[in-house]
Image 1: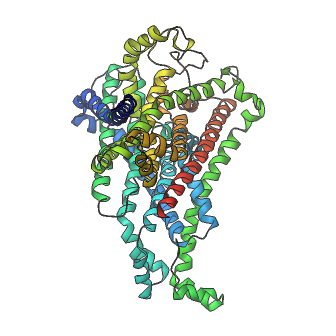
Image 2 (image 1 turned 45 degrees about the vertical axis):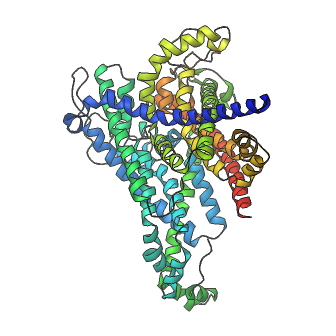
Image 3 (image 1 turned 135 degrees about the vertical axis):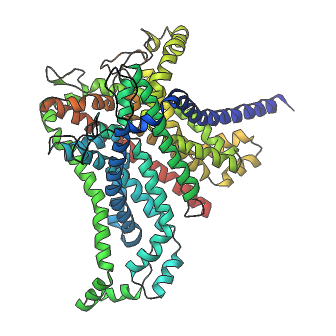
Length: 283
Length: 329
């Protein structure tokens, strides 16, 4: 082998191993994150964490029951707002759309999807907090709902497109109207995909902190009804992590572990169970 | 998607009142109308968002005009507001993030798309997707308690010893600051660069690679000189997409950047980003002008990400369309 060839071969091996190293580094970050959270937060994820209110500053112990329930309430509102709009909008794009309107809708959905979450927070503040002059659960749910819409919309459209044309033709050959075809043949066929997309969207907004900072705000106690400031896990993690107390830091780690656990478990279950054998998956 | 012509649709072509009635009764027109309304909600919300940002920042826009963008003073007490320090912090941290994330992400994407066996590639991509799902406040948490101490005691002193003669790595070492924020951003945007770049690379037609290999190129040469240049535009798209995310990233940056509105040449110095100042000051803003200045910052951030996202999508569509078009031909 001449020296030139040797040089090229060694560059080849060197660069290819470097790309492998890059992949290894990127993936290992996930295990670092999980490891640190379990190491620092594992001890404090106990019964009290899920059942008690935060203790006043200076007292140790306590939990984040209100933040867990709060996150649940805000996410419920977000899903109630985001899923129907995204789903029906997606049905329009895939089944009824002409040329101009779907183009505009798709374009704005992608635009909305790229808006930084903190700007969504300002929007929700202007629409749902400024007129009534106080922070509320509703405002938080609205902010997260707006973030869900473009994700649900675009994936619904994609999964509907993936339903084979023969199924539509079969239903119509039986004399079903277009709407009947969509509602009882096309949508059920795509339902797994759409459920996957909705759950992934929910898991994504579940970890959002920025849009909640000045919409749902925070609350150290229970928040009855829907019109008052409410605590949520991500905001609690932020508040406790930047706070000055050692107890708070411990609780922040525990809350981080719980939040990441919820998000990852949802992602893993949805991606492996629901999307298997169903409609095609983008990634 | 081409819709299937039906008897109902065919009847609809003649626009008689009876035909219209029949279509109404079958529910098709109603369904179309209802779904159309929901689709338009998306447009409406987006328009409303821009409108609200514009209207609510009116006071600051009238008061400061364009000088808002290059004024460095941010003094809520004296009611003097300028955005430059925040724009600077946002741009510097995002640039740092890209500088680290692009080589790493591109390398990993090349490995996943070109080298790894299919099963391994799919499994690793699954893990990368999970990584993309980690909430940003978690990155902030690890940043504050794990990365900041390491930066302060190990990395920054080492950088100072090695490159201390340049203005970039001078001054006191706090752990927090622009460099740390950039590093956290890099870790956060790597998954996006990997998954988009991998898709773009996979869309490159096989002929491209095989032709290079047939000419005697090594595996790396074929990848670097034939495949990557072909996917260049799409990779640029993924970088812009990642940049747009980095610019708007709030929580993790807020927690490690130091929250100090100064412009300093040193990367060790604490800074401030647009998203961070919004997160910190928005709910405590007193006075209309203060709030309106903050909303104008939001408007600036929105416009920045808007332009970048538009460019990114255009580039990605251009490459994937070309790639699949050639593959089909």
